[in-house]
Amino acid sequence: MRSHYATGRARLELHRDQALQVVGEPTYRVWRLFLPGSANGFAEGALNVYQVLLLKPNDGRSGLPLTRADWYRGRYPGE
Image (cartoon, rainbow, N blue to C red):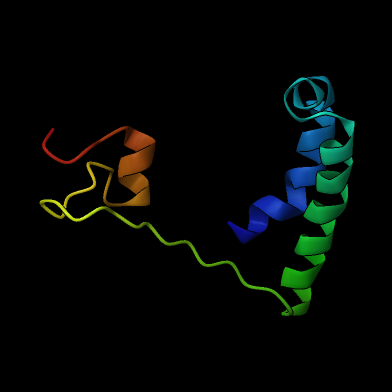
């Protein structure tokens, strides 16, 4: 996920019109600053990213792919 921040601003600017339709100018401008600032923080070792998936108690299955490769193949548990 960290590498996405480095290219995020360029991608955001490429899709500026679409982004502005969804969030408006103030939020768009915040993200234009946030993305390169975060990329710099990761490069300097000042920031980290942690991703957590939380589930409501049930049978313990999320129904989501188990690995990144499964995500890309569109493979879900039980298929």
